[in-house]
Length: 343
Image (cartoon, rainbow, N blue to C red; front, side, top):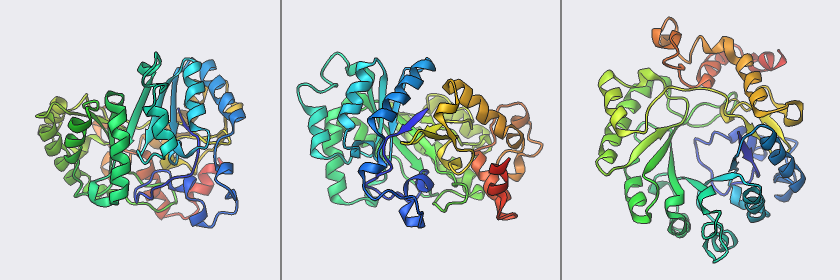
């Protein structure tokens, strides 16, 4: 599970998976809190969430946003998580303010104490040309501190992507030699940028080629969910086996939990089946709830070619991101998501 400790963000990525949950003011939503403080998790809810993780026998505390470091009590939240024995992973864009920078840089930093092995970062980086010089400088000074505690994350949302620049960053700052790869997917009933289904094979060929180049530098890719098997040719799949930490086509509930302890299956499906954390005994129970809700849709995959596909039927492929298929069905019925949520 992921915990969204704030919906405040200091970037505006065009592919943003969290668009529906985070950018409520741009959609004219009426429930937007008037202050940034009110858009952050309270200490009370944070402690309730930690209790829930413990009841679920889950020692992984994953902090997301927005940009999680913008929470006014961010450093305190990290300290409490570590004190309670959790392995803390922070998903960040690296645009840290001075307070956060000094927290991780100073002599009492959790990176310099006996908790150092339980602090990790995923730096979600965009191509250099897509950000300002100031943003580049802020990221550089954060990367200088984290070193082997961090890996890069890269979200593919257009066909002409280029992730080779990450090799230079990994080597310059001695980061983990892995790149966490995400495939931008449509958000149910909310516009964002993503690679269209008809362009997936071309993107797959480009990705396989770039991973081969990175492997020569001893840098491997790892895959998030949403990549369909048919995105790659058989030769490309063979190449990917050697240039990644392993590939398996997945689409399963990630479960994101918001600051008010409302949960949803994942960001692309964040409009659907929102529930309360308090209504479940454990994270496992919540996973089973969402698997049951979506099981009938998964047999159809995310595109026309999935129908009758032996790889989908044999569970060798998840059929890509479920949101792709649901968005396609919704084009024929504008009320599709409302009807689905009602059931």
